[in-house]
Image (cartoon, rainbow, N blue to C red; front, side, top):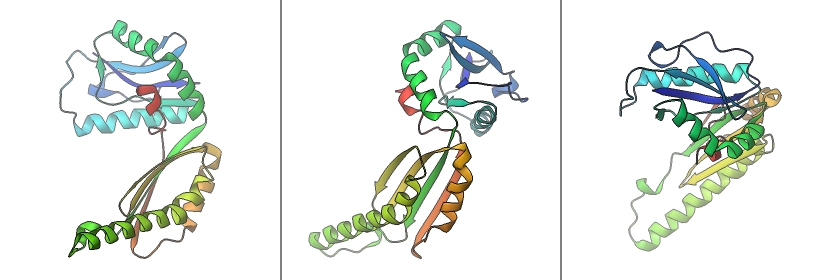
Length: 214
């Protein structure tokens, strides 16, 4: 079985660590695209272990530090042989090339903001009360977007945003040279007292490699 960690561009050297099941990392090319993979003699288990998740993520993180661009592969899909891998890559080659260009020189940051109030905690006496509560929740979410997301979105090349109730979740594709400025902007955000805000990163651009996996 072949396990794929990502598609890379400008990789200076393979990371000095082993892949899944302590297998050696390898480089190969398919139609001009460079891949980083490892091989296993055992079939992939339906259940992905915590160690596999951490090891996959560590390899991808190391690739990010050694490449001009990296598209992280989705954990959980293995290929029977090189022919199957090559066929899958060729089928998505145009999308992969576009996605590599999108993420070149960039990292990802994530933001999650959760209000301590939600419809689920309200004891609505009637349908009207429930709808009013829902409206208030949407308004809280919109305020979070204006207070937290919009100031950060201006520092990113691309963003994704999801709103659910009084919660927002966003990802930001940020130039590496702008990562420190982005983190400083996060530190300066005015956080409403009833809202928990968590920012993570810099990470490999998982959220912005999704197009190439569809």
